[in-house]
Amino acid sequence: MMTTSDEQAAAVAARAPDIPAEVMARMQAHLRGAPLQRGVAAAMQDFYSRLVQAGLPPDLVTEEIYAAVGTSRSRLRALLTGLRMFAPDVPLNPAIPVKQRWDAWLNARYNAKISKPDTSRRVGLAPPDWPETWSAALPALDKTVRPYGARLPRLALKTRDAVISAVGLLAKSREWAATRAVDVAPVPCEDLFEAFVHYLIEDRDVSFRTAADYCERLRMFFLRAGLLDHASLAALADLTGALAEEATDKDPGKWAKLRDFRQRFALPDILHKATEAAQQAAALPGHSTAALRLRQKAVAYALLVNTGDRQGDLRRLVIGIDLVRDSDGNWCHGIRQSKTDHNKAIGALWPGSSTLIDAHLLGDRPAWMITRRVAELQGANLLTLGEDVLNADFINRRLKEDFGIHGHLVRTLLTDLVRRERPDARWAAQHMLGHTDRWMQDTYRSDFAESGAVKAMDECVAAVEAGGE
Image (cartoon, rainbow, N blue to C red):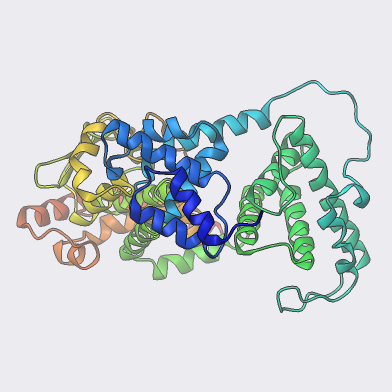
């Protein structure tokens, strides 16, 4: 028997007595326009029930609560989706370790190696064996279509064959995933495309460049089929870009880029990117990997300028040892540099740097929890907030993305520029809400004074440029 939206809203409230009234009101309002995602209501009820049992308000939710509710990957995703939509004030950051464990489990499923007999030389599935929505879209390859308004011309015969081959491999990848107990739906989405790349690289042993080409052919097909929405198109574009980046060899124009970069580069450029990354992270769900990566980038960039430290040192900073937060909320930095093994005493970081570090530790938790978070993270790595250390090219890759030349060259020029410009309090105040203390001004002037070593570095960089011409 059909039920009205009001009856459905009342039924949800009856099944979920522990969900707060204002949250339930948002869920019911949503129900009157569209159905709830499967599993959201049950997961939300379990979540709030456990908070009540533990005597915790929502803003003090713990990793253990998320782990208890997220007994499966799909259930955890349903809970996080529900909280994002209907309880945006609940911190999602504590769910990161739980999400990472489920992601690791999924990767282990895909990476499991099982013995298999020799297969036919034909790899991809033929169109009759594709999901119905895919095979029904084949005629769109042979004519001009406008599924989204813009004109998409018919494909040349050779291109058409390449696209059909790629889609056949995509269909095959779903079967491959099923043999590993992973059910991948045929709807174009991030999960489908990630399974495809797992299959290409692990089972077919193709290069990153070939995998990127296959993904581009999928884009051509699904656009003409009208099966992509904004999220799935963005996911496919991101994946294609990442594969292309992995396949990129030396950039033949890097020397021209380097000369141009040296003329226009200034220290504020790095700091603007740091604050921009922090602002982008604040707009994302607190538990998301994207938000974590943006906060890591913001802190790394700020410290590169603030202290001029080597990338290897930055990746290994430990909270409570290399960085300590004082009673005034300032982070103080005493680092032992890996190459020289000498302690580098900087004193208090710029207020802007301290603010970015606080934001990184808090995630989407309320600001008043910072003291507790610092205590919880004593001995943890600053950037990962755990025992792990970021991969060696983490900072380099982001510098390259932001400034268009190889990351290690950006860092070389940055170190050179920091030492030559000897930033003072006026410059710092303009770009990092900087320090006004006279002692700090003197410290920066002495730390970044030009020396014979700096001049030698200038000569080295100039020689590198000359050698590339």
